[in-house]
Length: 243
Image 1 (cartoon, rainbow, N blue to C red):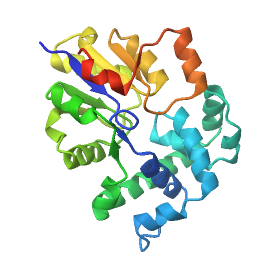
Image 2 (image 1 turned 120 degrees about the vertical axis):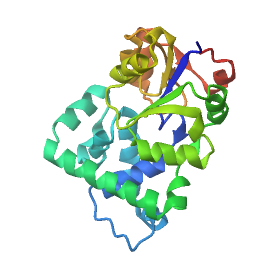
Image 3 (image 1 turned 180 degrees about the horizontal axis):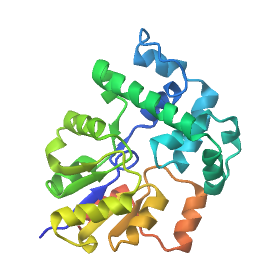
């Protein structure tokens, strides 16, 4: 039986930095729906974008993006700094933020579809990778399933993916569930993610976990990867990737 390929989405399959920044801004700001999405993008403050780019490197979930609205985000220097700052935000506020950000994403996806789809760019070679392993690909991502399906459909790749674990914060458990559904073991899975924490957690299941170098990462994560001998993967490696 062919091996299974399990992929993160944002930061592995596609680059959606601007889209994530937009919905994060609207997670805490009034969404004036009389203004088109392109107009909202132009209005994103430069200091907020700089904070979001930093926060994105440490985030695994939509909830985590709330930190970009915290003034102290400018001083984040490590994953521990980020985790402490996120923990200091009230759970009620995080919940309201995530709901508002998701509603903004839903609006753009359904009411300004072409604009929204245009904010997602496939990384070079990922379309070929999905087609090469069509039917044996699962997406395990913090992004919602409906958004993932819409983006894949736009690129004619929806039929290549057999399963989507959306809004997933426990990727090791998702890999184990995937194996249970397929009647196989974790050793048959090749998992690719740009978040080092996810890669290390999934590696502990026995899956072949690879750290994508084309997504979001920090110098601290690169040092950690060296200490723990985490296997990395470059875009140029994809054509020869054994699954």
